[in-house]
Length: 189
Image (cartoon, rainbow, N blue to C red; front, side, top):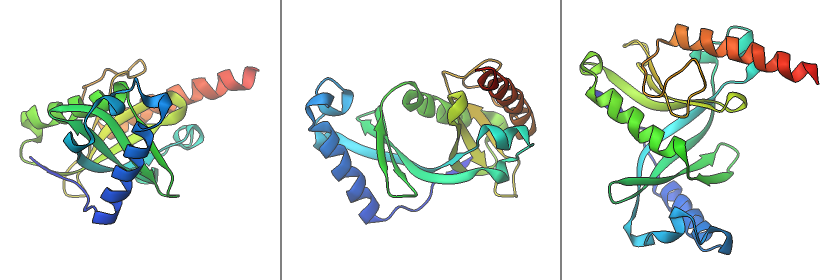
């Protein structure tokens, strides 16, 4: 399997590193993983584009083609460990996060690399997220040459399981049902 990542400019790498250094230096971050690692030992890995779908789009029957590009994300590595993610939003905003989706990204990549069914394909690494459902998945885009593959990340909301390969149509059907329920619940208040 060939996993492709987007080309990254030197300027964007410098911007991410500068932002990470600034965050790690804040007093509020002194107990976070970013502040505990030596900045010289940190590497940026696996750049990938982040796409987003909203609840209304899902309920209307969105496809993966309807997902909006919202940013570019990197895994922040300290040795072999993913300790954070860093994202540059399309509006030039910056976020760095720690938590389950960081390790979930690394695990989803491992699942994809070990799956014999994907060994012959050529895929672009992406992430799909539905913020209102606290849902993130590794999206391996076949670019029209291969069938797209989607692997939800832990903590995945039921009925998903982290690391489970899901066909895009099945994924979107399940997400649409979750979106309907969420919108109905929100309308009660």
